[in-house]
Length: 336
Ligand SMILES: [Mg+2]
Image 1 (cartoon, rainbow, N blue to C red):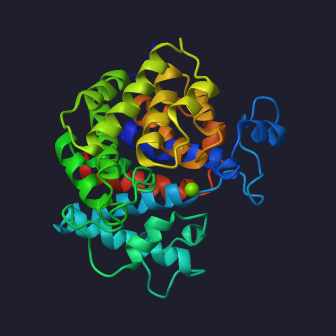
Image 2: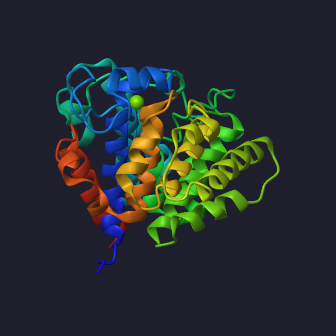
């Protein structure tokens, strides 16, 4: 007998799953081939948590850090009546401080007071430069207009946890424009948030992804994102419940937005509910392993809930307490 998955389970699952995928991929983000990963970690590649990332068993890197700050911005906007785009931007500026300071400043509150987040874990260049340049970007005049790195997709699951499809899509895109202005980055980010929003209402993963593939639009961003997602779905449909590393590498390397989303979608779909298999497939490739792991973890956790995640791994997460606190804040703010 299975227990119904609640919206609260999906919120917590999404955030914990993201942290888990991030942690599993952290050590191999910059190992650029599957052969080298296998040489270091064994014939199956990474098969679980290991302390190979600077001795940290389950590290919280920029992907999880930024996701947490996105969530904090949305909570503050909802509680204080502020503009979500401005609040998320200001939250990301607080994240930027964690990358340049070694400990929380006097009087810091919320995430800015959490020592565990003051760690520089290979933050993306566009995230740093976009936030450092003065003022806010807009969809018409975005920051870094040529950048379509995955750094905006990997931080954007919370929009879908807090809002319905249309609003999640819009807000995620406007917040993407603060760091990654390429239309494909903005489109991929919006669709990722939209898929998460659909999962929150119980739409099955395959159906939620299908809706994203079918989303209207003919511009460059729509075309590139749709093509990447359609390729991922086709391979996943043929995978018969077992994701394959060769398929992952055929979808892409994940450094750019639409490839990162497509790899995560492939792994989440192809594993057919075997969450551990999906997470491991999402990191064992020569590309941006921690980001694709984080995005796949967000999708799997939102689709199957926190109870689907391996408890012994979850308990080891470096920022477990902080992730749980932010999940509590989201649940209290958006589910009542
Ligand atoms: Mg990272």
